[in-house]
Every structure is written in C-alpha cells, then in structure tokens.
Amino acid sequence: MYGGNSQFDGNAAFAGGGFMPSQATQTAGDHSFSPAKNRDSQTLLPLSVKQISEAFQSSDDKTNFLIDGVDVNNVKVVGILFNKAERVTEVSFVVDDGTGRIDCSRWVNEAVDAKEMEAVTDGMYVRVHGHLKGLLGKRQLVAYSVRYYCTNGFLNCSFLFLSVY
Image (cartoon, rainbow, N blue to C red; front, side):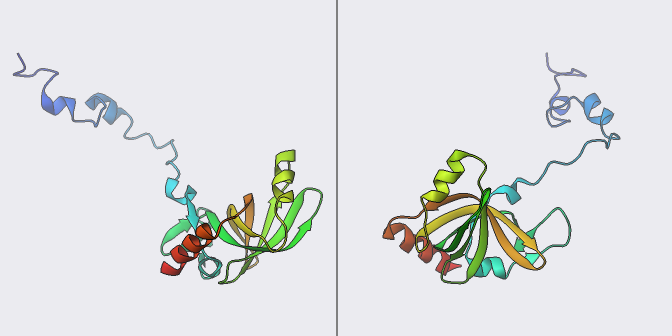
C-alpha cells in the first residue's frame, strides 16, 4: 500500500519542508526576493537614559543603536518630564530618569495627540514610548506615546527593574 516508489513515501513528504521537491528546486536560483526584516529590532525595550547614552551607534542604515549586541529602535523610558515646550505641530521636552536626561519630541498631528500632551506637565512622572534617533552625535527620543505614570508601585517596580541592569 505505501511501499515502493509511491508519492506518499515519507522521504518525499518531508523533503521540501512543506513544499514538493520540484517546487523547492525551481526557486533555488531565483534571488529577486528580499529577506524579511528582523522583528527583534521592532520590540519595545525598557531602558534607562544611561543605557541609551552608552549605546553603540551603528553607521549603517539597517541598525540604529546596539545595546548588549541587540538592535534597538523602540524604547520605553520612565522619568520626570521637564522643559515642556509646545509648538504648533510638535511638543519638545526632556525626561530625567535618575540616570541622565534625554531630549524628546512628540509630533502633534491629530486632536488625540494634543489631548495626550495636554495631560502631562512639568514635574510629572511619565512613561514615554518612542523611536530612538541619533543626529550629530546626540541621542533623541521621538515619542509616539507619552502618558502620566501615576502610582508609586509602578515607580518602585520600574526603578527596581532598571537597577538590575
């Protein structure tokens, strides 16, 4: 029943990793596709400003910053908001997390963005999610979310987590 030169032989079924052997050999010479982007660089990493300031800035276009050998683009920083300056389409501010300060900017494109930035003022603890950028040797966080970071329990956990690293 399953013996001999059957197409249902175990070797034929698993030869191409889900593809038939004829399909696997047809595309072997075709190099017109581009490789998939590494999803690890898209994760949101909780970092301290000190870790950001000590990060290695890569010179190629594929990676922006390296921390402990990991590509870093999206980061979360918790700290006190200072020097908030509102403009028509942008709000700039500084975040101090106890290990250092980093300049941040938040583009205001919609009413939701404006309401989010109105909710935070100087001296508040905030949680900033953003893209880490480097320009002329200076690190900056381009924020896409700035939220009030309310309870002491969260602060204690955050600083305890950062002190481990």
